[in-house]
Image (cartoon, rainbow, N blue to C red; front, side):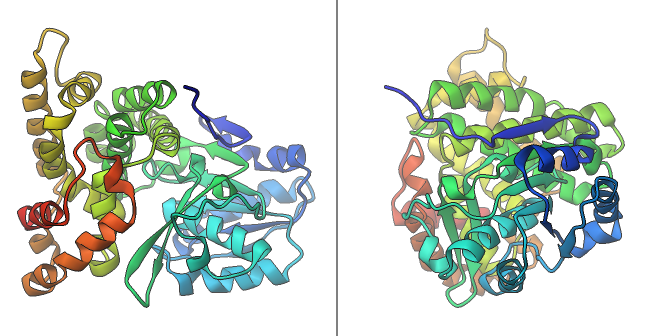
Length: 385
């Protein structure tokens, strides 16, 4: 049985990769880029740096900087209008997962028309949009190498999963220098997001030999370095490992799919505005404990790749060490419970049936080794409280 692997056409990896944007545009035959970003990237000076690099090659670039964390249908509309009405031949998406996800949506809607709801799963989006050059500034989402975007429908509070080759960036510039200014909270949340991507890609029912190799490599890079970058954001060696690990994890889950953690995470984020990586972190220990009985060897492999179990450990011992590590990691990275995050108990519990339905509707829980019922999902949500 063969596996189809979809990747960006060009990948530039390492320190200073973002400064290669002019050369990448030239190689793609693009001359009129629109930069999609957020106001923090402008404030930090990253956008002016890119514009200066482009100007040195006689390329002018306008900016759309109104993307928001956890992008919504309305938040991307101004970007769609700007891209549709301007004479642009590509998009440069610079920022965390939200600007890159926003750019993916803007790319398709600007060129193909329609509404975001038209493109949500289970539709496979094969139409092409404006070419995207993705430049991530966090080591977390892996969005620069995935054919996935997540856009929230404010009318229903649903985080819409949208998938297909049409969302894949044409180029990814993976420059860990851009992560050195990340605050510790963002570093932790995006780092656990990347770890979750790698683990879920490996235990997914859609896992394959190619995605396995990327997922295991990602775990080997992320696990020993996540605490290091959380404690010392200027640790270049750890930042570089996290950035590469995040990208490899993105490659892995884009070609294998995520599972129950992500399925349950999206409704928490949509309903209570919990950052995506943080809601993943809340869920990862409980979902892992729920899932281990149906894939004990796979989870033991994760423990060994993460360096918290060795080859002499039995499967059971390795999985005990894995669960202990996930709880310890959340403690050290100060991951709150839903209650500690500030969610009201009544609001959370009243919404559990709806969140469980949305989780199942996303399709991700079906990739889990142990496919959950609605009641089992509700029970895991209750356990988080």
